[in-house]
Length: 406
Image (cartoon, rainbow, N blue to C red):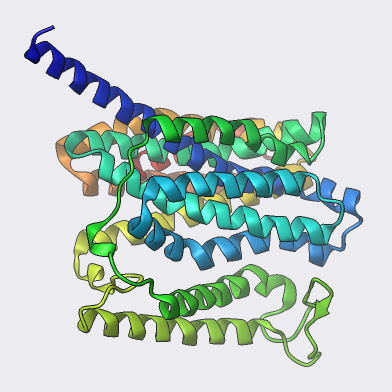
């Protein structure tokens, strides 16, 4: 074999490993997103099986969202400093342990505690996987890779209720957690074989512990307030807030204003502290100077709108179809399936279109399509609307997601 042939073979092998690495990283995204939607469907079964109160069972999902948001930036920074693949594999192990122990939970308190472990694993996986995709692909291939990434996110969110409904109907809610284990094992082996280690040279230095505490607690306070404001009361208490046996001691006012105001103050302090570190030439946990770039601001706002809209729609439709239309969990998942199909087929196409016309026109087009689909749904949905009547608007919404996440 001459040198030219050897070089071509090595290049082909490198290309193959990069795309296999994307498959492994997409599996982790599938786990993080799908797990939350599966658990949503399983909540009634969990409450019955563990004899839990409504307040406690709500924390099965709330604690996951809180811990995930509170630690996300911290784990992303640690991955940049000490190795993204290393933290990615560690996140898979932590998420797997949390899944196994959640499935074996003998009490609601045990389950809530193990959901904390799952959330930590998910927060380790998400930013490191995204950073690895960004560092592995360049140019036109990066657009295709992020198109596949967006496709995976949309499909996972829509297929979660389908898989969750099937598992709850045919097995047990515990298998909603156990089903993660084989996927995690495959992802760990794949990560060790095909994912290259990477770090950020700009992330060297000491870890910003004060920033991690201020940002994590601030986000936690805000998100807790938004999640539980309706159930606990925005000002006057509607119900008792309790966790692990501790109950909010005041009966004249809710815990929500304290959570929101305290979270906002801590986030303000976080921004101020991080800007001070940047001005001193020290490594902050989060570089707020990035907001001076228009593309970064546009991307961040767009991602927030898309994510909030998709998960809110799936949650509301799940309640509507099961409570009003009296469909089973499995039938509900089937009704939402067109959304997944639209995202699945359009995201790779959107990724390719980005290479020709740029990201902004494609993302804006996707958001316009999503808005059109939402208007279609809101103007036609009634108590008499059948699952068949949802197919076209949900398919259109999925197409919008596929474009907008490209």
